[in-house]
Amino acid sequence: MSIAVSAPLTSAAAATEVAARGRFLVFEGIDGSGKSTVARTMHERMMAAGRPSVLTAEPTESWIGDMVRRGNKEAASPFTETLLYVADRAEHTAQIDKWLNEGKNVVCDRYVGSTLAYQAVTLRPHLGEPAREWLRSVNAPFTLRPDVTFLLLLDPELAMERLGSRPGREKFEKLDFLRSVDEEYRRLAEKDGYVIIDAARPLEQVAEDVWNIIARM
Ligand SMILES: Nc1ncnc2c1ncn2[C@@H]1O[C@H](COP(=O)(O)OP(=O)(O)OP(=O)(O)O)[C@@H](O)[C@H]1O
Ligand SMILES: [Mg+2]
Image (cartoon, rainbow, N blue to C red; front, side, top):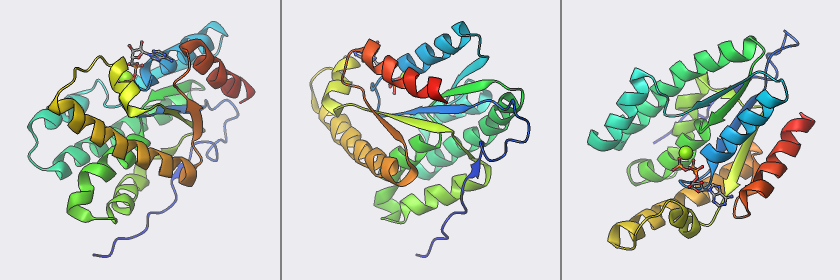
């Protein structure tokens, strides 16, 4: 099967005509790596520093985000699930672009990287290696390039411990899955220049590292 190579993602930074356009900050990582905790902390610190900030997440809280959550439980085809995530992102991106144009910083808990990492794993049995490029091209027309994507790296076993999962067959299946997702994330980090954060350390240290990078921006 031949799959078109995606056009480059449009750049939120490059689109900056209005000097006051906000920064688009994304947090990625496997389940339990600390994304929501760190994203919230950064949002709160920016607000406390007098910088307008919006905290948002995918799947979104909108009707289509509800469809994604429903699709996770009910969809028979992994393509349905994927396309629901992508549709949710198309709507979300339009909203993010508005916030950025209003001069707000946008802190986003999961974005396109989540689809590129997780769905590369779920679609590989169906598409083989081209799954990665297909996912990239299907997202490209409406995806903003974040100013920075932080990748919180954490051993999948430790991540599952943090989420309080109990031993059992399900745990091992999930662990295998998260290991594959972790590999995809590491590839993406290299390809797309994600900033790698060692998320195994205490929250204060993780937050301090991320804050120092944001403050320099
Ligand atoms: N650096 C840390 N050290 C120890 N525990 C942490 C750290 N960061 C987050 N946690 C805890 O780990 C758990 C998972 O964190 P969080 O919900 O932020 O992860 P997440 O990446 O958003 O997970 P999910 O992908 O499932 O939404 C929470 O109980 C949180 O309090
Ligand atoms: Mg979370």
